[in-house]
Length: 239
Length: 237
Image 1 (cartoon, rainbow over the protein chains, first blue to last red):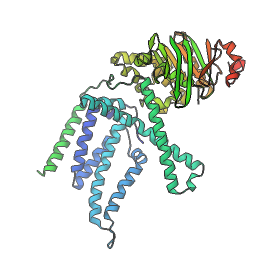
Image 2: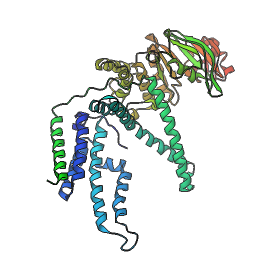
Image 3: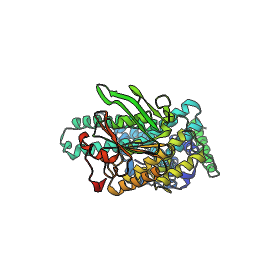
Image 4: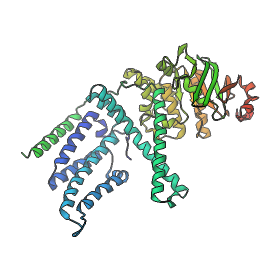
């Protein structure tokens, strides 16, 4: 799974609020894209964001192959019919169009995650959403970003430990039960340890957050985001 | 100074700490020794109010830890047995800054503390590195830096050498020697006293939740076996 990688790319240097705004606008325009050229354009922007963040298509494919595989199943399932003709092209094409929009959104999200420190995301959220809701959301997002990779590593270790002692000879049901139970136990243990570590370091809901500052380099991104929102609105209204 | 008076803590039917009284003076190096399950970790978790006593009191610099947990936690820096479970930041700098940020300090002060703490553990200039790219020894030093950034008077380390190779252990000990020389009290919780007896001012031996002895290292050497702790050879002490 891709996580924050320190660096000095264009995307790293953007204000996190700019990056969050861009993601939102890009998702809008991606979902409103209907024609092939529009979809190609959305794909191009997604890949450019990846490149500018210092990430690569290969890294995304390696880290998220399972997501892409699940997405690829969508059109197949949509096209299947219970009886003859067994497969219909039209619903599959509709599904492909939906799925194709999700992939570039994934690219932009990866660009954000790899180029934005977790605490800056928390700061951006708390600056944007005032009050208790912002604090709660900020902490929640920060902890999720930090611990999802840890939990995935735990899951990998559980799977490896089961396989290392011949567990793969057992039925899928038995293995699934073991994996779920052990992963849950580890998750609870991690939560416990994390809670203690947070307490020991005087966890505060409203700490000093990192300085956030808009710069000149944020302007073109905001303009592009505004353009995306405008295009999406025009498309949605059918003007 | 940390003062523990008649502290008792039970988990259900099991009494982990049983009527313990002791003091840790400022600038003292204390080893808290005992076999697994002797109550060492439970005891030190009371030092910075991570647990509430069933009975008894813990005072840090004269203030009740239970009544003033934030004061206790800023005075007693805690480094856990598995530091990687307690990392909150993805990068070295982000994690070390976590504590000072929680204290609401201004950015310049946070930067200064992070820089000082990283320098103290020989990790200056590495604040932008990802923690999971570091070796086990370096991760242990990041955990210590995280505690030092709170500028505590006392540093408590729970089994800090577990999983570290010898050079990493020596590097960690060198850093602790520096802190000790700077006047900080050091409490090391361990069941393995190699390289520690020669450094400690005092050894407290625990077994079954009780303090069995509290004496200088030379005297403790004679009594370690009775609590089930391996006695280090003179060369390794």
